[in-house]
Every structure is written in structure tokens, then in C-alpha cells.
Length: 309
Ligand code: Q46
Ligand code: ZN
Image 1 (cartoon, protein in one colour):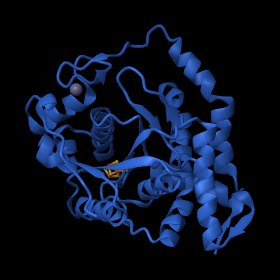
Image 2 (spheres, rainbow, N blue to C red; image 1 turned 180 degrees about the horizontal axis):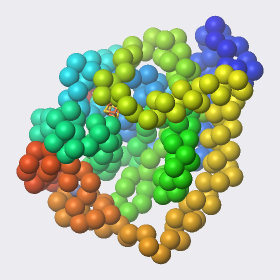
Image 3 (cartoon, rainbow, N blue to C red; image 1 turned 180 degrees about the vertical axis):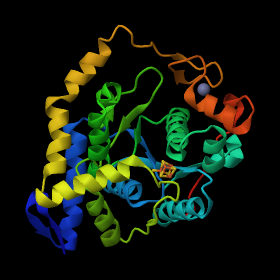
Image 4 (tube, rainbow, N blue to C red; image 1 turned 90 degrees about the vertical axis):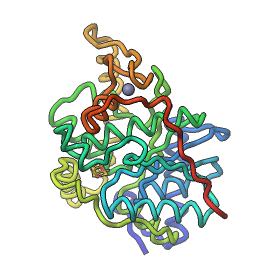
């Protein structure tokens, strides 16, 4: 039913699902991602990767809730939210929802224009902050994201192209809790994009297939295409590139950045109280530009939705 060329293997449906579960189990074990008793929060977008991650973690016995951020990207957000909600409801799982327009006063298209930032840059800043905050507010031990092997290899490729040493030092499948940030893990790093899509189809997971309309011009899509060309000629290249980096080079970048005497110490954002490298954090600066108002986040209520059974 499906070939996995880098593993030199062909699978039937049942064994492919077992293969995916085994890859996630091995990633968790190899990188010490999760303890069996951890309370886990999975950031879900309604797309294949995050829903597959949630499904696989539940299947492996983890106590995993979901977190969906409404980004206000027109129909795309409406449909993605519907997929996330339906997934949770069908499986009686708990989904927390945060709506950027109604809770923070801006959406990604207008916010990025007002702040004169690329949509994906404004979106990334918003999502990272809201993921961290929801995980800490909810008392979760770990935040899970659905980054797969293609995502990580493409980001690594971009960081190497420009020798972004700070980013390289942080590009790990596990980031332990530090300086007020929650622990973050990526249990899908051993699965490719094609495999998470196949897993969802075989498992009856209805996910949002359309690309985000704001992704045009996102450099990582070009890096993925380039890596796919290489993978076609030489199966296993993506995995060798990414896991070779983790095994042989990541620690050197981490040690180099940690020893940098010019590195700015982390402090606390005067607006939201979150961790920040400057007086006002990147998220609060974005909100101020996007809404033309200073942000007062600590008073905002967290809206949670219990999936009906
Ligand atoms: S949602 Fe946001 Fe992505 Fe859309 S605006 Fe860019 S970052 S492409 S994962
Ligand atoms: Zn802040």
C-alpha cells in the first residue's frame, strides 16, 4: 500500500500504522521527550501533522490535550478550526481554543500589514507566544508540535545556508523548560510529510489539505522542494542530513552559543510578564503595532472548550 524508500520497505495499512507509531515511540525514547505521566499539550492546526501527532500520542497512552489558535486567516482558519474541533469531538478529547482576533484584537493578515512584517513572521511570533502561555497557564508538562522530518530538514537547510548559528543551536527535537519557557518536543521528526499524510488517510483522520493562503513566498517551501529533489536521487538523504546534524554538530553550536559573552540575558517582559530578551517581548510589540494599543495580557481570560462526547 505504501513504500518507504529510505527504509527500503513496503507496508500494508496495518503495518504502516504500526510503523508510524514505532517511529514516534523511538523518537520519544531516543530524545527523552516524554514521561508516561506527563500532561501533554499538542498544538493542533487542523492539518495532517498535528492531528497525526495527537492521534499517535493518545494511541501510545499519553494524556494529551489539544490547543488550537484561531489566526483569523479567512476561510482557511474557519475550516482548520472545524477539522481540529471535529477530531477532538469524535475522540472525546479536550481541545483548548484561543482566538487571536477576538482575544487579542488582530488577525494575521491585518496584523502583519500594520506591523510591516511578513505574514509567517507575525504568525510565528504570535503562535509561539500563545503556545507557551497556554502550556504554562494550563499546568502542562510538555508542549508538542507536529514538525515532521521534512520541516526540520528544511529549517536546518535554511539555517545552514545562512549560518544562523543562534538558530542552529536551538534546532533540537527537544527543548527543555528554561527561563520561563515550557518544555517543547517534536515527536514526528522520524516521519516524513508524505508519511503523516498517509497515516491520516489510512486512519480516517479528516484534515485540512489546503495550504495556508499566506504561505506564498515562504522560503521553507522552496527548501523542501530542493530537498525532495535530492531525496528522489538518493533516498535517506533528508534523514541523514537532519539526524547527522543532531548526532555530530548540534552540540558544538549549542556550546558555542552558550559560551558567547555577548549573548543578551533573558529578562521578563514588562507588559505580559513572559520571558523576553528585551524590555517588551516580540509578541507584545507586535500586538501594540497591530492594534495601536498597549497590550494588557495578564487580565485576559483563557477560553477553553470541552469537546462534547
Ligand atoms: S499558518 Fe502562519 Fe503557517 Fe500561514 S501565515 Fe505562515 S506560519 S503559512 S504554518
Ligand atoms: Zn510580552
